[in-house]
Image 1 (cartoon, rainbow, N blue to C red):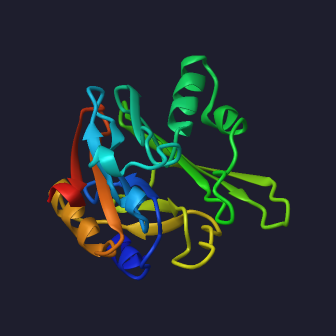
Image 2 (cartoon, one colour):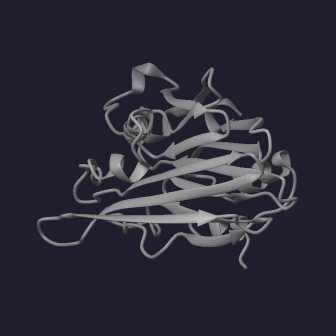
Length: 238
């Protein structure tokens, strides 16, 4: 199985990405979320920690902020111990609200579609991970345009239980760089990871394209207790 770091280093512009899985000990779920950018507006961002253990994006220099609509949001919410919502847009809060109402992530995302940024029509990618009571499971979703002249949404959902230690799945917004940007295609990609939280964080950060990387969030969640620790790396604060 290809390593996550090798997979990322081979793509100059995967855009925004979500990786969910298990660390190599099998004791902790592992989460990674990264953002990249080509424009000044996209690169002018940092991740900021929130009291629940999640994060929001924030403009590093407010004077350079042009359009916050698709770049300022909460990528990670933690509505309960051991439960993590991870997305590339404001659908994070849609999922949170639906879960609070006793509904599912899929219910929430059926109310959403791809981003309105023609001609790219950036996919909305989302994940939901639960680690508690010695069980680990996660779901991933990709909402993308169908490629027609008048794009219609294609909603794809994937569910995984008990990944093998040191393995997980990734979805990201783009296949690579281009004009327009080519959307992610296919199923979430199975990849391997290894090392401690700090080692994995450093390796992923170094694997991301130096010119385009913006911020990285990583987190390990104990599968029995739901206790977690996380790391944040912001290029503009390094």
